[in-house]
Image (cartoon, rainbow, N blue to C red; front, side):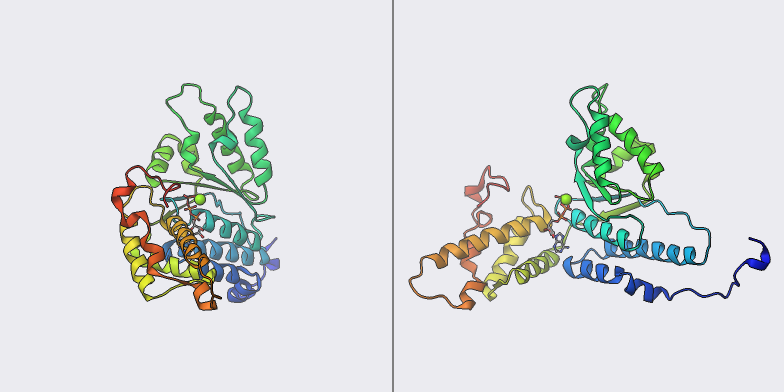
Length: 309
Ligand SMILES: Nc1ncnc2c1ncn2[C@@H]1O[C@H](COP(=O)(O)OP(=O)(O)OP(=O)(O)O)[C@@H](O)[C@H]1O
Ligand SMILES: [Mg+2]
């Protein structure tokens, strides 16, 4: 295009705000905001990525040079901090902005990618990639792909196939590697090829006690339950004790605790010969919480999260 054909520098685009709303991306980010308590830095980064893609779209409209940005990411943080939930929303945002075609999430771990025998890994990895194409491939505990202690570990083969796809098909597949922060850093340290292809590192912090309480209230509201005053203060004590125990998994532990509390509530009501009020069906009391082993540590010597009653 020669100088006379170049649109004037004053040519205008759709207003970004308008595109933000009409593309449905604003609705998705609002939903993310409503469904997840806290996580301000994470939400901010997702917004930045949305802004990047949206402005890129407007540049394309103007016929300006536009190279799809690399969007492979790492999500680091402890269990139950919202990594999988955010990845699912991220996939939808990428679809709404036309970065990927389908916007689905395929969540895998090492065993889904790596075979037990020679020759099994490449077909396995390629099959998973095929399923994830057009969406997001979410690899949980990605560092298990790399096992330097085994001289000929098939994980390396999976990593090499992933690296190629991350480079060559990055406009229709986003790879998100998730796991504990320190292990992920070690993994990147020994896999510079992987490290250099990850454009965004997003860290998910542990929740504060106040945030865990808000998460509990949000989950209960969604399920049409609530704590009475005694239950609210008892649960707050529960959270403060549970947080210091082994196997604590942030929001997931809160969800599990609420499941057990609802079970005790049901058992308590079950014995009644009289009709129940709507209020009774919805209201959790301190006694439903106090039976937890968290308040009776002596009885809890070797319990794990799954077996905890
Ligand atoms: N900030 C939050 N507000 C409300 N609910 C949350 C929040 N974070 C997580 N949850 C809920 O907690 C549960 C666990 O979250 P999620 O599976 O996304 O965590 P994760 O980081 O992927 O955990 P893991 O590492 O164990 O896979 C989900 O039900 C999710 O909806
Ligand atoms: Mg997860």
